[in-house]
Every structure is written in C-alpha cells, then in structure tokens.
Amino acid sequence: MNRPQFWQKLYRDLLNQHPQQRSRVLNDLAHLSIDDAASDLLRLTFLSEFFNSDQYIQKAGERILNSNGLSIDCLSSHVALNCIKALRLGDRKSFIDSIKNAQLPQIIHKLNDAALLKIQRAMKPQVSGMLRRVAIVCSYFGNTFHSPSVLANNYAHTLCSLGIEVNMYSCQELSPYRMRNYHGAGREVKLPKIDTASWSQLLPKTCSIVIANEVTTMLARWDAVLQRITQFNPDLILGIGPYSPLVSALYAVRPTVVLPTNTVSFLGHADVWLKGQDAPTSDDEVSWQGQFALPLTYVHPYRILRPKKHKELSKEQLGLDVKAIALITVGFRLENEIDGQWASKMMDFLSTHPNVVWVLIGSNLPKALNEAPPKSVVNLGPRDDVTEVLSLCDVYVNPPRMGGGFSVLEAMALGLPVLAYSNTDGGEKTGPYSIGNHQTYFQNLAALVTNASARQKLGSFLQVRFTKYYDMDQSGPSLLRACHLAVEHARERFTNAFLL
Image (tube, rainbow, N blue to C red; front, side):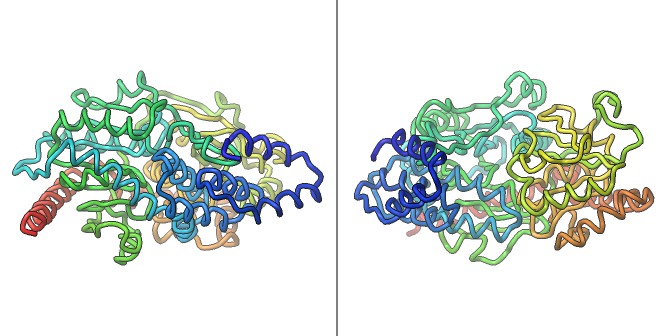
C-alpha cells in the first residue's frame, strides 16, 4: 500500500465497480489504520476523491504536520494541488476556508524553514542605501497567456523604466516533481508551460529570466535558483504569486515586497504587501493566524498595462454571426470553473436569447456546456490575440470563481461592460458594480444584451475605474515608495535582530 500505483489502479478499478461493492471497499478503507505516513497520505487523498469531502484533505494536512520523514516534494505537492483547487471555488471566503482546511499555512511554514536552511548558507542579511537591483521571484512562470507571468513582466518593465536593474526567477513551486506520486488518485496540477521564444520578444531587453528544471526535486531547484540570485545580489526581492517558500526564506536576508495574484495576503513572510482595493486587512487574515510575519499593507492596485491591439480581426474570422450579441469569458481553468448552477443558468439564458453567442478563450470546452444550444457557445481555446477578440465582444461575463481578475481588467480597459460576483478577484476590480447573487447577475445580463445604451454606460464607468486604479502606466512612483518602505522596514528588523 506504500506504492502510488496500487492506489491509482484501485481508484480506476473502483470507478467501474457496482456502487454497493464500491461503497463496501471505501468504507473499509475509511476505517483502515496505516502507520506509514506516506502510505496514509495516499489513502487519505484517494478517499478525498471518492467522497469529495474536505475532511480527508484536512486529515491529510494534519498527517503531514505530525510527520517528520516526508519529502519536501510531498509537502510541496499537497500545497500546490490544494492551492489550485481552492482557486476554482466561487468566492474569497470559500478560498480562504479551503486553504485553512488543507493546513496550507502551517505546511508552507515548514517548507519556508527548509528553504531558509539553504538561504542561510548562501546569503547574509543586507540592506543597501540605494535601490539598484530587484529580483522578481515568481511562484510559477508560464506562457504569455498565464496571467501571473504577464503580471511579473509588467512589473519588470515598470522597474526598468525607473532605472532599476531587474532579473526574474522561478523555482516553479506550483509544479513539484512527480506530483501525481503523492496523490492516491494520481492528481497533478496542469499549468501553461513556459514559451521562451514568445517571452524573448516581451521581456525588458536588459532582463534575464532563470527558470528551474521541473524534472528535479524542489530542494535542487532552490539550490540552482538561489545560486543565480546570489550572483545577482539584489537589493530587494519582489515575490509574485500566492506563495513561495523561496521568497519567504529570502525575507531573512533582503527587503521583500509581495504581490499575491489573488485578493488575499501572501502565504509567507514579507516586509510589504502590495494590497488591492478590497483585500482583507485584519492582522489575523493578513498573517494567516500568525503563521507568518505581519507585513506592512500598502494599497497598490495597479495590475496591467492598457492592452493594445496588434492586428485587425473580424467576427467572421472567428465564425461568429456579425449580428449576434457576443458574451466572452477568458481563463485557462474554465473547464473546471464553469459548472454547477451558474453553468445551468447560462445555458437557460442562451436558450431564451437566440441572438446571443458566448465566446470562451483559454481552455477546453467545459463539460457542463456539452448540451448548450447549437452554435450558442464558441470555444476558441488558448489564443495569443485575446485583446483583439475582446474588442469584438459586447459583454464580459465572469463566472463565480476566485480568479479571473486579470481578464476582467483587460475587458474594463477596453470599455466592455463586465459582470462579476462580489468577494472574488473579478468583483474586487469592478468594485461597486460587482454582484451578490445569481438572480441579480442574470437580470443585469438580460438588460445588457437588450440595451446598447446600458452596455455603453457600464463599459464607460468601468473604463474610468480602470484608468484611476489599475493602469500600470501610472504605477511607477507608487511602486518606488513601496520598495523604499520595505527597505526601511527590513533595516529596522535586521537591526533589532542584531541587537538581540
């Protein structure tokens, strides 16, 4: 039972068993006691798939915390899988509850300690009087459609425009080696792979990027990337992503600014958190119940550069009826995010509005839409001309998901009306125009598809909001203040640590 292949084969076999037989086997496994921690994790994650129950994920997290012999890759896999799973949930509270249930703050703390041992051997605490070099360290760096990677590139350009030398690094911590070997049903995170040829045309000319080899262990990745960061000798670390044990460990030796990619605080240590407009601010929420150092919160909502069209595109080229009202949704996780009651309501809406077509960009067609009315859904998959496609559409519809804030901002910048739910990344961006329930959402959608004036009015309001709060063209002075704030904060804590 200590081999993942055993559990993964059993998982496939049980899917084809008669329900009564399957129920008896699952009941026996639920009451089984296994001493070996690695084997028991396979059992618990196996059961979590069949029962779709948070209790087994919680037990898996607790087993990790109470065991000392598990590998760093095992811990990293549990964190990555459950972080991505939480992003599929409908709102911020559900996301936070899921993160806590899986014991991720405590497990990430253990990973931070492991990374810190590497840091302490390679670098000494240092605060420079001048901000000359910044290392941007990402949880994961993917292709040019991957929003956090685009965000990192935007910040690299902004820092370079301020005369600061920038290099970018990633240990690909959201994609641990052989992740499926640590899960009883063989689950793994599938993220967009880096496209070095495309990025070479988009990164600042003076910026180099170091990406760890994904077929090595996390410890080996930390070693390799840390060696390159040490050579660069940055004056400040800018961490981008939901968590990064490497960033959190670098906090021990350099001023650290963090920019989580969702409207919750960074799962790790930092001097300054670049907070959005509507993110939580209580000490418990920001420090994840005291697991991490409490950062200074600095309101800095700027996220994207105003998108520009690079070519002409027509509805005919996309196979769209030129007279149809085009809705659009963008995201590389749509096949997992569009489901349940909201998907059913969208299908009902399309059935009663035959002049409406729904365009999807970024992933495979969600299974929930397999029975959509003919020609009502056009799935374009991943594309590199999202701006051009958005410009052809009439309304951006954001599902009830934690993510989506980046594509919402692109739509807002282009003057599209956007519908997004409250207490989500997208809803934070639309602010007072976010929506609290399905009934209001679909009432508003019906009003927009039947009234061009209403579409123009909401689109104009949101475009003004984008310019005021989110356009990175005006973010430089604010970002520089945040960096200097982090430097002073780090100077104080390093001095205090020396005096102790």
